[in-house]
Length: 114
Image (cartoon, rainbow, N blue to C red; front, side, top):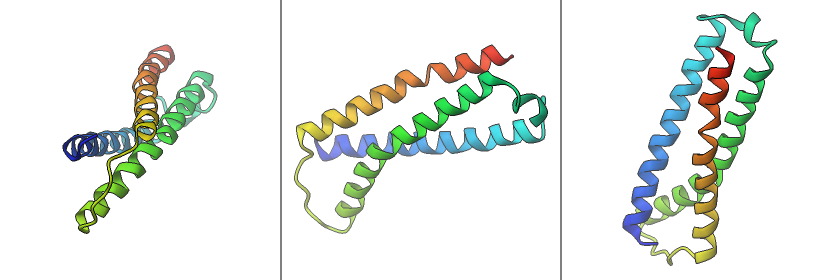
């Protein structure tokens, strides 16, 4: 994986992280202050399945984010890094593909709650 490819993944990961954060903030306000309120959501099993899916996706995203963040910070400090190993690239690719596949289920659970 080249440095340019790593930079592209870093940018995509930043956008993904900011999107996830804004989704969590808007979801918090939706559950606590708007829409149906906490009394509806706390007893809705599909809501908890959806929250579990969000937690799993969040946990999955930590490993690739930290790998690429550390490499980016080291590069900014002037450290010359060897290319990523094929095994690490394969692991990150598998995790990112699992995240993308898992994103399908969150809107599905949301529509089942409606």
